[in-house]
Image (cartoon, rainbow, N blue to C red; front, side, top):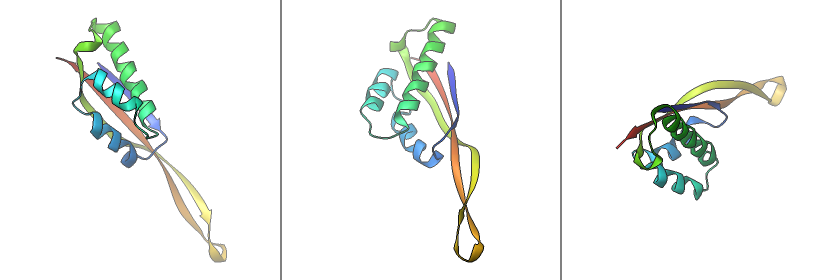
Length: 108
């Protein structure tokens, strides 16, 4: 029961805050907590949990009540490199970071 979110356009440091909140929790508790959380990454992670639950139901016939979040890890994805003009004709680099979220559910 896995689901992967690739190249989500927010830095991994910010997404790891949400991942730490729901790690090890029941699926129902995690989705309830994410729906009231005022962070931008909470909606994509909630969708990722719903996708993993759908995978578990479709492939293994497991009910949503028996699932909990075994592992969630946030790794870095691609980095978009942009530049900002600076003084005297030079430029400084801006890194627009992406993150890859891997979620694994387990049955109780």
